[in-house]
Length: 285
Image 1 (cartoon, rainbow, N blue to C red):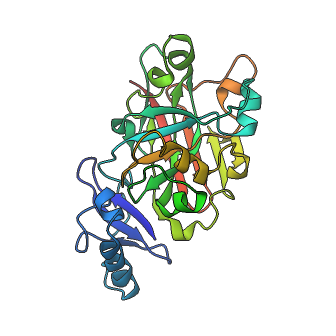
Image 2: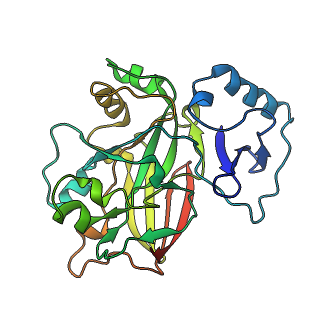
């Protein structure tokens, strides 16, 4: 299933995109798309049954905003330097274990919402990423199979980053990762049954129409199953938590000087195979 949330910010309602590309209203079946829904097999079954029976009313998508596909996110765990080609382009050694940092849930916006370039920013950068959405409480998982069984679905994430704040201002990476609007998510939460192999997905990103990132999750140093298993050794993952799994080569940081960091007026588009497409215009905060 392709689950999403539509409407004005803060007042989104749950929806489903059916196999014919028609937007369907889920508000008569479930209150929202969130962690409790993803953990409730009966509720997910009701959605499938209603969709199969043709009982979900169609929505007019004209002018309808698409919000983040997941409400009330608990935490966003991010994996840094998780692609071989990205490590090479930045001159970094591939990590021996996954690099973990966090983004606050309030950085999440819709896939086509405006992204704000922070005040005094000179190095705002782009990163297309595969987001993993947790559907079952995960702690001390022991195997790849067990890890994937705890995944509810996948989505497109844009891990927008300010590189000066991240790298040059001391401390951890978090200062460059948590500026407002720095995590567009969606358009859909695609349930895991529609993604048989998360290590076989293409990722692309364009800036002002120019292709910048053209990668594949096959390049991940630590695959999705290992990331979920590993993270569960250090913290409990709950339904509705999100893991951003890293970005492939092609970011501004990896380009020759002068590096083409983002400015107000730039337009970034990104997509992951089968998971949908985003488009953001950048403006000054």
